[in-house]
Image 1 (cartoon, helix red, strand yellow):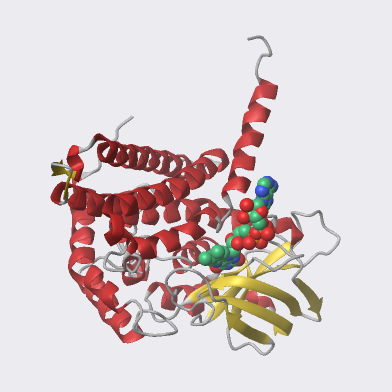
Image 2 (cartoon, protein in one colour; image 1 turned 30 degrees about the vertical axis):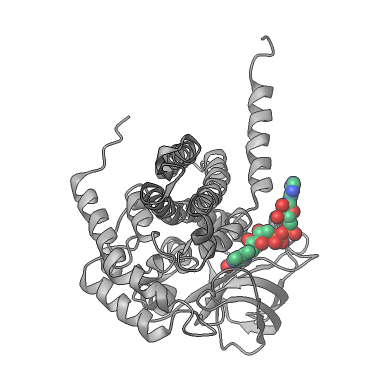
Length: 399
Ligand SMILES: Cc1cc2nc3c(=O)[nH]c(=O)nc-3n(C[C@H](O)[C@H](O)[C@H](O)COP(=O)(O)OP(=O)(O)OC[C@H]3O[C@@H](n4cnc5c(N)ncnc54)[C@H](O)[C@@H]3O)c2cc1C
């Protein structure tokens, strides 16, 4: 095992960190200036232009699409550096859901789809959204409950259904819609992904869901599809392979979430450490009290473990392993760690931690959703437990 980070990657990570500190963190003061989008779009465009000029644009996409062409393992430290601000991944074009959507399109889009959707997305000209989750009784934690249908009429598909939590749909130029194309198939079969321009007749954005935390670009939308007619060119990959494609998207996407989240958690630890070393109470700095030291130590230890889990799962995925167990363990551990680290940082900073003078209170709210989206902690624990039980069944029963 070699845990060394190549010198070029260390340099790149440092450049990203400097860019985030100098160009992105100052923008956090404007994160609420636009009542709908949060950060005003002209400010986003400006910082994106700077990221391009600095050679930090779109770390995951290949150079022919204007990106840095980094592998899943290589982006681990780069995404953490970008994630030091919730605005950082947006500035570098590696935020959810566009980053996962680009990954999916890069793997499965045909030449026309690459030209129409992937190229402008990688260039930052447009935004995208991924519409899988449905309100009850449709697909949520259990995607096999998918209720949205796509029925073939002649050579056109007619889509009807109801989605929600489609992140970014309020600004997206196109949606990736998951719909059932074979009603007679087994629960986890017969689904297909469709690429639908947002102005396709029959797509109705009902609302942006009001939620805790910062406004997110494009919102989290509730959408209805009323007889949306799409031609055969809208099919992404093959008809009936929707679940396989979703898995190919979500495996790495869970890890890239963890990489970005580690960035704000590390910054939270730094903020707490700075306060603890400067603030005096009961005859010493706070950092002189063991209860505070233990909080700092626990946060540092858990972050270290989380990083190693991310790196190992990324390595497994790159070996062609699906890494279902490892990705689930990592998603649970990192989502919960980030929450604990921010919580401890707030505790250490006292009243200042609760105030909006620091970003901790905003991150605390944002981090609550980390334990729910892309698989709730309970669902990932279920996947891990199934593996444990299966492995026990295969092993010798003597103890
Ligand atoms: C901020 C945010 C952004 C999102 N973005 C997108 C997006 O862009 N596209 C998209 O398609 N979806 C998106 N989602 C949806 C997200 O993936 C779902 O919310 C998530 O998969 C859980 O589904 P659900 O909300 O229907 O919860 P439900 O399925 O109703 O489950 C509710 C709760 O039940 C528990 N639970 C579920 N299964 C089990 C089990 N087997 N054992 C024990 N407990 C269980 C869990 O605690 C879970 O939180 C987003 C959600 C949020 C909050």
